Amino acid sequence: MKRACIVSTLILSVSAGAAQVRPTGTMELALVRERHKTLFGALGMPEPKNAIALFKLTYASRDPRGRSTTLSALVAVPKGVAPRGLVVYCHGTQTERAQSPSKFSGKNGVAEAEAAVLGLATGPYVVLLPDYLGHGDHPGVHPYPMGSVNADGVLDAVRALRKVPGRPFALGSKLFVTGYSEGGAVAMWSTRKMESASDFDFGPDYSVPMSGPYDLQDTIVDWLTSKTTDGKLYAFKVLGLAYSAYGLQRNRPGLKLDDFFVPSFASYVPKVFGGDETKIAQRLLVKAVQLGALQQVDRIVQPKFLKAMQERDRKNPLVAAFVQNTCLDWTPRTPMTLVYLPTDTVVVQRHTLKAVAEFRRRGILEDQVKVVALPPGQLGHVTAMVPALSVARRAFDGR
Image (cartoon, rainbow, N blue to C red; front, side):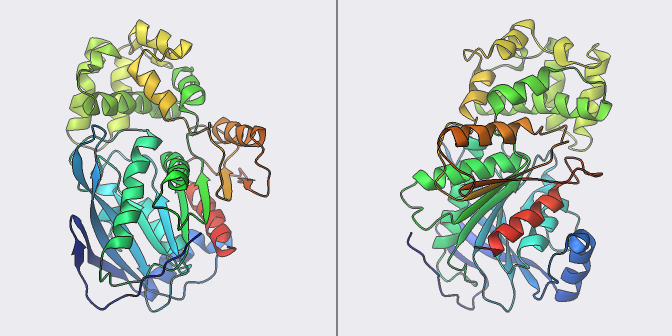
């Protein structure tokens, strides 16, 4: 593979066409060490040796309808040291725009972005964290959880960052990809698309998708439609179904939410997503329970739509989108490690095990695609993110 390391210059804000990178904050070494110890201290990670500069990248891309648009991303840069390479980190599910990576200034509470920055930029790596469509500066609705769609913006972010002339930092010679939860699937799709893109002959060198929903066709549909007595888990299911349908409907002209949900729930979904962004899952759950959907989504969805999901009927647009964004039917060339939590009830282990089984069937052996199961302990889907990230960091350090 060809490699490129671009020499840095000493200007602070530069642009190339629609692409621009500008400074947004700094994490001094004392703060980096303090926060790193809190998050990673029990995981045996090396003590940080560098401060971190934060930048915001804005760049040109396209929305799901093929129209030109501008997206945003966070870039974290190790200060005073040469970076080992560029790591692309794809974030998990978000419903609040304030939690977009580009909103992280180094001190404010953007939890996932902070963990990714502290875990990776101390490598030292330059870390690129795209916001995705519908997040950050993009005014649209996020196409959730469509990994293939969102990966296109990720590739555009890498292209833009590499091509901005006079960029005030170097990127190193290697390219790595990782991401957690929804971002795990985006990371896998990004790896897949980088392998086939003619302008990505410079990588990726290694990929670590973590606890991602790779199988939207079967595993996610079975999970969404199954019965559960756990209230918090059920809230995730109601949110997942509503978010998926709303994102598709808002990005594809001609669809109506009444095609998916009973009228009272269909009319409520845009009010929740279009208003105050806080407590969206809780509000959707309350509405579902009011409609009699106590432990299963059957009372809030149209019978025809429920049947389409159960029968995997691709004539239904959301079922078809789930099928199109399932990332199993390919043969990776990039060395990978898949990380998962066996006891995860949100992104269940079947996603990872099915992906691995398919790769093995295609002749991909363990030396090419490794699998790491996190020790369950007290971990859940959310709290497993930091331990998973430590696995990714060690994988990149070993390249």
